[in-house]
Image 1: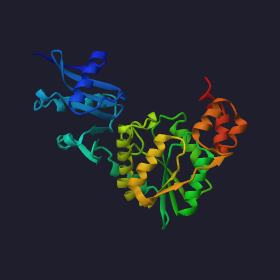
Image 2: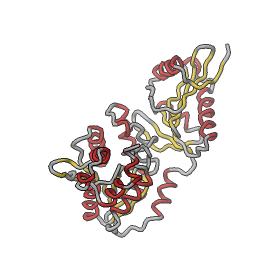
Image 3: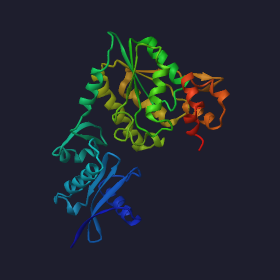
Image 4: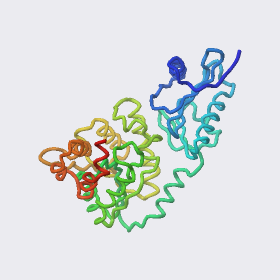
Length: 332
């Protein structure tokens, strides 16, 4: 018998991966950048995948367990990350496999009944958040937080921030850093800073990889409501509660209600269950009985309806949308 480690690319190889995962009680996820496998002759006996800087879907055939194949797969995936210059990475596994990975250079971030999230020991969540906290100057009193994507910043976002700022002594906005939006993180950050500059108690920070990211909520940008999404929602919100609220001294989290998007509404409901009375839901701002949303703004920008856009976005956003860079986002 001969063994070989290969990149799984062909349809047959991916089907072999799906079958092996299924035998291990795991599901195949399409969001992958690389999948590797160890074959014994024509039989797949071990596999593992990467999605950018996240290691996941590691499985070994039942008959080959005890042969250290998990370590072989893990070492290869880490080598692939190191080759790409990736220093910070995460690992998803199941509660049943948790103990095994505790023997490696990983720290446990959080777990629920279905999933366990580890990170490598370089610049851990505790270290990153404490560094960010040390750069803030907060006054005595209540501290509230908002997590926003702002793709782009609308009057709806501004209304939620102003409501929160009027009711609390400090407001920390964690702007989603994951760059899967039409507007880059840098652009969204600059626009949000301009829109909030008159609110002296508002602080804008990057969300880090620990809020709505490949690591905590990889299905967020797919906008699909399924069992996996619900598991990741629980993980993402629990990490916010466990680390962000404690380290930044956050008393409340503010969010707009969601009458349109089913996935976002489910996320709000999950927050209610976890954060309870620490969650404040604010009625979304409307214009002519239409709920203001970033998706409407993007649609109007694509249609070059700038007169209508004035009713939905603050001046900095409007000026950017009319600029050459803004127009280029929607028109080649």
